[in-house]
Length: 485
Ligand code: SAH
Image 1 (cartoon, rainbow, N blue to C red):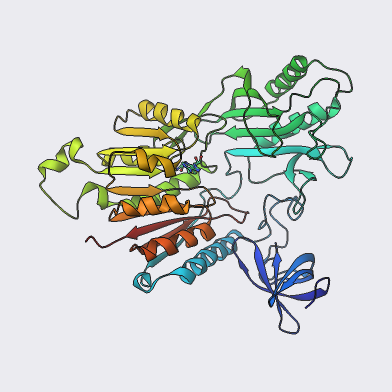
Image 2 (cartoon, rainbow, N blue to C red):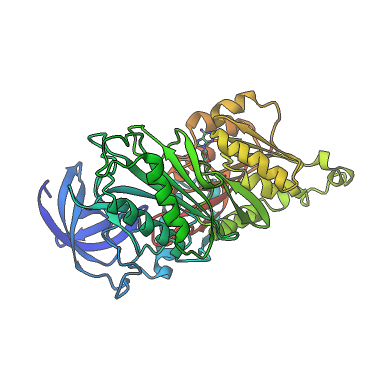
């Protein structure tokens, strides 16, 4: 196969996250992204090196027998947010479980070969499951009308309006459509990523499942002057937007309407100052009976009901290790708080895992890099009446050197890139008998598991949790243990 050649073939399987393995008519293999197992597709080869070919999907010639007659969302295919809206939920689950199992089996050491693979737990909700969405402003096509939604699949610039987005509920869709019409009617320009001009950047919407509280944050540049058709004053413009949202009806309750300024060149939501236009700049969500205050920029699992399943799975894995049931010990010790185990919750976000474990631990120490999230974690622990939690702001890599305490148990929940190799080394050196690793990206997990196994840890149990129906993402919980010397 040569670069530029057009090939046809059947998708044999899909590897994480969206790599379709296409077998062509002459038996060749090409990796084609965003295809579904069983589809007949055509693709153009864009990379052909050392017998490894990659192609770009041109069209789906025949649907897969696995696919639904009609996709679960009208935006499917065009919208870059979801990839598997055309697959029945059961198929999505078995595909994700198989992808994770393959990645782990590929790196499993002989000592861990007997590990227990517990399959995948489903998301309690398959639609409207998200508690947070970051929509982007842009145009539908070059110099087209203002759009507010998701990036078009495979496009850096084009934005697809997603008025019927299925992974959020009706309140998100209301906020989205009210906001888009409001700014479109007034001819307010979006921030152009190449030219660095314009005003509207992102719309952040968060809604708690348990409390129904909604937080809306409009992210703009500070380049308001002179860019508006009618020369609106900024304050007046934003107040008008706020009033339009307040006048619309919703099922939940608007807890806060915010405006954040961001002039950075990177296309991410960062905070350079936030004004409260209405209400407050935080809201509350509840997980497993605990209450959490969440601020706009702190990490919080985006599927609240799914997070309960995830944390329960982690808690089951940790199980008796903390309560010392397996090693009855002195008895006197276990009755006394002080004698309990010390747990490190590394990459702790708003401290959800730490607080879930606090009642069965002597002490929990959370480490998290975003200071705002650490503040929220402290407040949350107080709110939940937990007095044995400590939260430290900083990079896990650095904090490991400064901490005096030694852990008896470690829970790891790193971001997508996994654990920094040097941080992983320090974590391993504590030599705790057991660890739970929660991963939001199985390829990073597999890489880290190789290191952990090489350094004496065995993989005991693996369970996937689907927190992101319709999309390529999957969460994995792993129980690791090591022989005590
Ligand atoms: N355990 C939490 C958060 C997991 S997400 C929960 O379940 O809600 C991963 C978290 O790691 C994020 O909050 C991110 O801000 C944080 N993080 C990323 N890199 C880090 C680092 N080097 N040191 C400490 N925390 C980090």
